[in-house]
Length: 338
Image (cartoon, rainbow, N blue to C red; front, side, top):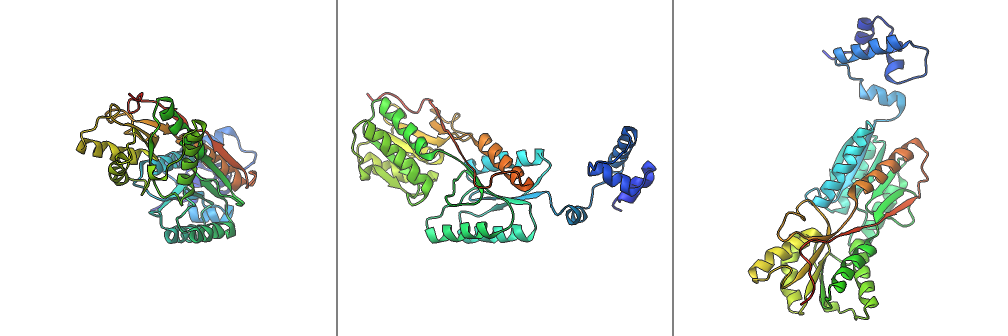
């Protein structure tokens, strides 16, 4: 049988009200000795408060819903782990919804989390190829009466806190690194340019080229998906354009390029320089280790969680946006053009 607050009170020799005051840290004149005795009894009896009853009193569930677009993607998996860990450190439970990038499933999870009375929602993706779907999801989020935090995206005209990495700077840093190594024909292996994150990285690439007075060639851009398969398909197309280096829009694409290079008997970086984005866990282990533009996932999580906690408490400016800086990590997959 489940231990109740009355069982704790009886075992500690105090009233149920005293136990409640201590567990909820209410300001009440209770001796330190009594507090320690009650807390010891709680531990001995393995007492856990009835969360439904607590939520009815406090009007909170101590739970945050976390929506991510692809749990199999190492970037989102790592970011969600950082967010979940930081929320749990604050004593907040996390319910996760994986949408597989589907806007309908995204809206379904928003409704599900609202029905479960979560204290807030952290969303990792708010951009879909169908802009009407993006508008519908944003409109739904703006209509709900709980805090929302956008992690890894800045959403314009939003009433909610958001944090992202400067994606144009990501593209600029990646391309400029290759340019500094003497490369002039630099291919891009990207996801859909209709998605803002990819469009921004491409703008950064274009900016770097313009500083070197190199014209942008559309045939040096291969658009597919942010996946290993994209890299495998992109390589033969870009080799046909005589590229000496490839900017992969994430590390997964770069892995696909590595894989396909073996089929073409190409050596990285002797025959082809490759740079990725994200610095996911395998990037410094594969051979040769991948040069990549790292995104500060722990810092994204830190700001997202801080924004959520402040929003729940009503102390956060809801429209605040935080933009973080990426970092180039040079490894062995890029080299001087010979």
